[in-house]
Image 1 (cartoon, rainbow, N blue to C red):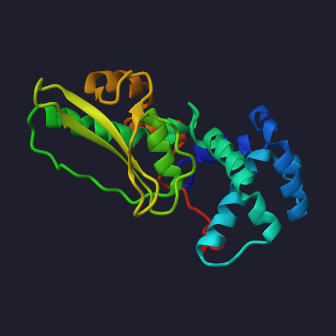
Image 2: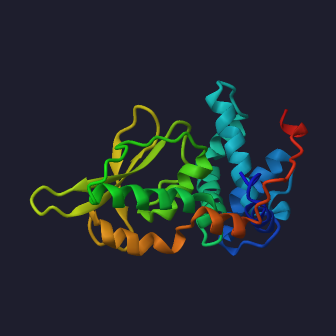
Length: 231
């Protein structure tokens, strides 16, 4: 997640070692889960409940049942995990580092399309849940959809209104393969189809070019990573 962006990794470590008041309302499920896991999640930092939830869901998706007592808590764990995930990803420090370059690409491609410059019409990227959520959050798509499921999809569509010729942006979300397509809105736009120029104005504070991204990340192309624990 932060291998090529040290500042991003540092920020996540700061969050996991900082008191997070937004997690207080989940004290009950945090206490119950800590008891089940024999691990004090509250002491170790409540936002880490996301990692527990991610582990449970991965286990369930592989056909391996979790303990009945934990299965019963899954809905409550999910709510707490989604709050923690949002705290991790959707903040002004991490959003530009996670998805600022991708947002800039949308700016450039949409501007080219409007100008009549031939451009690739569909762009598809494979991504982890972190990346999907970050792109959704940086686009100001609402309502928030929680932690992305495996093979979920988020996209920004550039559309041209035939009657007026104006260009608009429509955020699209598919929770999982086979699920119904959801048409979201852009926060601050005031209508389902957001005028392209207004979308630019709303989201432009998060756009980064490559040089600025490298600077903010403390990026070093000569860094050597210890990958032993991942091999």
